[in-house]
Length: 126
Image 1: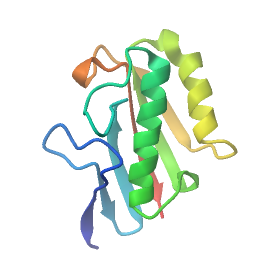
Image 2: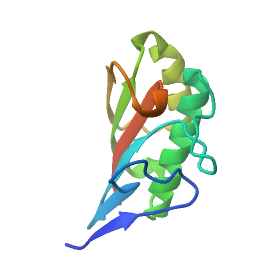
Image 3: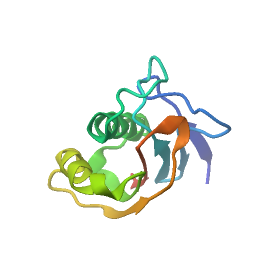
């Protein structure tokens, strides 16, 4: 099975020694995405709504760069720095996955890179 990096300029470049995503056969693993602007590498806002929207856009672009769609996402992991933002995040998330409900975990963490308040990663079968 060939292992290939997934790369797109429509999502932020990795900020460490990792890939935006990896394809391994029909499976695609998208690295955690923050709410960063792909052009500037900076967070788009300080609030969870703006960051969640952008993180999901970034994730979507990487999924599409793998030749897939969000309907092929099988699992999503979400990291929030404040579980009090769960309902607000959930509303934004639901708009991206309308009608499709991948397996999902949401956990609270003490901190995220760049001071982000949400990070999202996923697994795709395509």
